[in-house]
Length: 619
Image 1 (tube, rainbow, N blue to C red):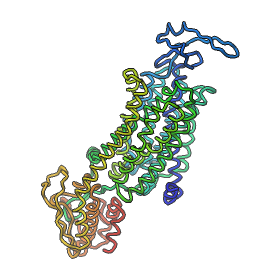
Image 2: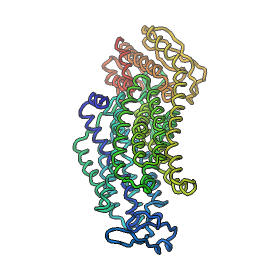
Image 3: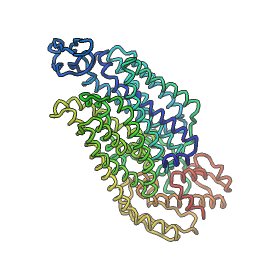
C-alpha cells in the first residue's frame, strides 16, 4: 500500500509511463531468458553443446549411464507399461556445455555492455528523444528473437544473440533517465523498484513459456516471446511523451569561475565532458556498489541458467515453480525495498539506502543456502521465494544510489557503466560453471554454494564497508558544515577549515575557505581561495550537502546583487577583448547567451535540494 500511495502522489500519467517502462523491461528479460528454458530442444535440433546418455523420450534412467556414444547406443532397457515398449538409450544433446554457456553469457554480454556504455551519453543530451530510441530498441530486440526461431545452425543463433544484446543495451539507461525526469528524487527508490518488477515477471514468464515447448516446439516459443515487444513499441510511440529534463542529483550543474564578475559560458569539448563524467564515477560508493552488485548478479545468472540442470534429478516440475516463485518474490522484494529505501533516505540520506542493502542481503543468506541444501525440492523452492523477497531489493536501490550522487549530465552514463560492471561480472560467471562442476567434489551443488549462496554474504559485507566509509567521510565534514550554516544565518564572518580531499587543483591543502557573508556587501563571493566551485563540487558536495547549499545560496545572492549594482551605475564589464555596458536591469536580462543571466540562477538552484530556495526567500 505504501508503494501505491507514493506512486499516486506522483500523478496518473507518470505512473502510467512507469507501468509501460516496466512492461518494456518485462519483455527485455523474457526475451533474454527464453534461451535458458529452451536450450535442450534447441540443442537437439541444431546440434551444439555437450551430449549425455538418456532415454529416447528425454528422461534419465540408471540403465543409461554410459559416458561415450558407442556404449550408450548399444544399451537397451525394457520399460513395463501398458504397451510393453522397449526403449533404447540415446546419445543426445543436453543443452549444456561451453557452447551453451558462451551463447548465454559472452555472446550476449559483450555487445550488451559495450553498446550500453557507448550510447548512454546520448540519453543525457537535450536533443535526444529517449522515448523514440527506446521504442525502436524494443521492436528490434523482439525481432531478433523472432529471427532466432528460424535458425538452422549455431552461428545463426550467435548472430541473433549478438543483435539481442545490441538493442537490449538501450533499455535500462534510457528508461532510468526517463524515470528520473518523471519522478521526484524522494520517489526514486520506489519508482525504480516498480521498474525492476520487469526482471522477475519477465523471468517467470520465460519459464512459463517452457510449457509451450512440448506442444508447439522451441521455435514457436521464441516467436511468442518476440511478438509482444513489437506491439509494445507501437504503444510507446502513441502514448508516451518525452518529459522535461530536470536535475535530481546532489552535485551542482553549472560551471563557474572564481572571479567576482559575470563569466561567459565556455564551450566544453566532448573529450573534456567525458573526462568530467568519468571523474564523477570515481567515487568510492559508486565503485563499491557496482562491484558488489556484480557479485550478486553473478549468483542470479548462474542460478537462472543452472536451475533446470540442478533439479533435473528430482521428480519436480521446475517450470511450474519458476513460473511464479521469481514473480511473487521478486516483485514483493523490489516493491518493499524501493519503498523502504525512500523512507530511510528521507531520514538518513544516502546512508539509509545502504542500511537497507546491508540488512536485506543478511536476511537472505540462510534462505539462499536452503535453496541449495534442502533435500525436498518443494521446500527448496519455498526457500527461493523468501530469498527473492529479501535479496532482490538490492538492484533498484543500488541504481538509485548511483543516480543520486552524480550530476544529471552523467546520470545515464553512470547507469550504463553500472550495468556494464554487473553484466560483465554476472553474465560471464556462467563460464565458470562447467569447469567448477568438474573440479568440485559435489559438482553443481558446490558451484552454486560458491557463486550463488556466498554472493549474499559478500554483498552484505561490501555494502557495510561502503556504509562505514560514507559515514566516516560525512562525519569528517559535518562539524564545519554545521558552523557554516550557522554563519550564514548569523551574517557573520566565518573561516571554513581546509578540505581534506585532494581535488587535483593548484590550491594548497591548507588554504582556508573564507566566508564573509555580510548582506551590506553586495559583491561578496563564497568561493575557495584561488579555486572555482567546480574544483570542489564533484567529490565533496554529496558528502557535505550543507556546504554546497551554502555556496549556492551565497553565489546566487551575490551574483544577482552584483549585476543589479553594475546595471545601476552603468558599470562596464570586460570579457576578454570585448567591452559591453549594460545600463539597466532589463539590459542585463537581455544579455547575450554567453552571459550568465537570471534564468541560469534558477537552473543552478534546481541542481540542489529544494531547501535552497527556502533559505533565500527572505532575501
